[in-house]
View 1 (tube, rainbow, N blue to C red):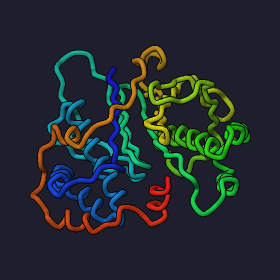
View 2 (view 1 turned 180 degrees about the vertical axis):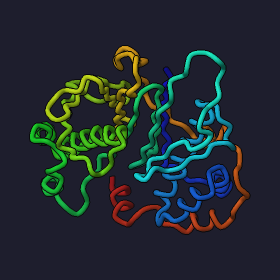
View 3 (view 1 turned 60 degrees about the horizontal axis):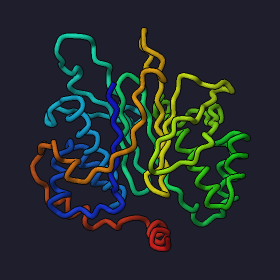
View 4 (view 1 turned 90 degrees about the vertical axis):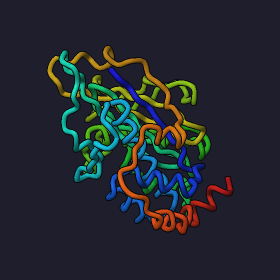
Length: 302
């Protein structure tokens, strides 16, 4: 089965006029218009990178010409391939369907995709909570974690280590929610994670973390965890595809792979323009502040 793990660093991307206009030409018009409505350049860059990551994946791994790809959003905002509805293939055994998911937060946009399983991905950057203290932040977020999870988070060490544990748990929960497509209505206390005793690193992907759903361990779900850098946690949830005759997930998955960091040139390597050049797209982007004032102050003070 196929497996894809890609990342693009939006935070350090300073697109030229020609790069931004080319990117805008290579996505659907309504997506270009939606990106133009973001108030801050940081969000516009993340959204642009996410669209290009997704189209590159569909083109290169699913074998669909760039110009034929039609992406739409579910009522919950999750992107899906609307056209072509069926990917042509040679006669023979049916190829397992691809599942894919995007996340962008902090300095990165990431894509995870897998054949034959459900996929959810979430990336979280460890940041201080802003104008409130860490204990107050945790108090506000009390209902998002179980008592056991809070005991793990609050025993992690210093405040920055507790925050790292908090965001690690948060990424795990979000990856599962995104894989099953439930959205905000899901009670996060139904899900409890028991972390691997091995520390997360940038070199290795861990698959030891276990999930309990309604107090029962879920053997059918696998969670991959890794660090993109010292501040960014990534969790990938892999679950059964609900197809009869499917082999147990743990025995059918390939070994875990790290996320590959792509450049802008990589993102558009297979791209073809879908619309005419629109200079106002660059003018609008170039006038945006990078991020809200507090985020800029936090970034420059690190």
